[in-house]
Length: 280
Ligand SMILES: [Zn+2]
Image 1 (cartoon, rainbow, N blue to C red):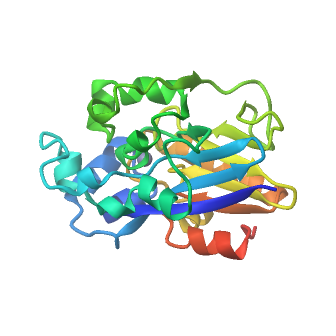
Image 2: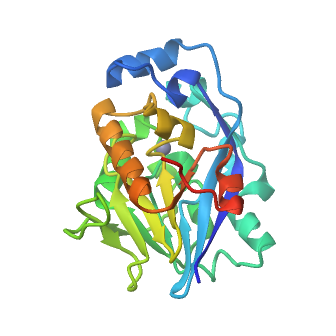
């Protein structure tokens, strides 16, 4: 028996041109469109996911931290933080408190944290899991720690000094249309698959239960609507790479009953509660 729970850690408001870039625009053009855009999305949920599995409790991402809501805490030298994003997380909305509400001690009760990528709104809650294994895609880890990564929404200077993740690479083991994957559990029911585009080395998590699969996309798509319409965000380093990843997610969902669980989808928690699978 596997159970997946959506956990919301506050909200993030972004430019409309980040949520979905215009078709045909290159990666660079999309960044210019984001800076010029004067329209904003509604506050989007920042979601992470708890997986309760016979081999343990696993988290996918950790949400954001209340500190990033405090004016001046995010680096001021970076226009991405000063002009492109508004984080709102109250202290009681951090993942540690959310888990406590469920009777789970984030410091002791989590077997491993699986990171889709290291952007601030996925890595902001890492300090809540001081004793967990961390599993991070090697390529994303490398990028996130570079200067380019710091410009692009990663905050390595804020990660806990104890963070020493297991850096993984996809193995030659196919899962549905994905040619490579990384098994997390020995029964193969939790696997990570490469879904690059939003960030280099980005991976998603598939939870394969008996009747249904849960596809925890990270930011490979912000919501199911964009996935269905094949819309790519403004952040992508290559729209074609993002589209390839989205096509593989749709292909997987076409052959397995699948609940799509992105990190910023208004309807993800409701779909999960209703066990509503992606209709192809
Ligand atoms: Zn991201």
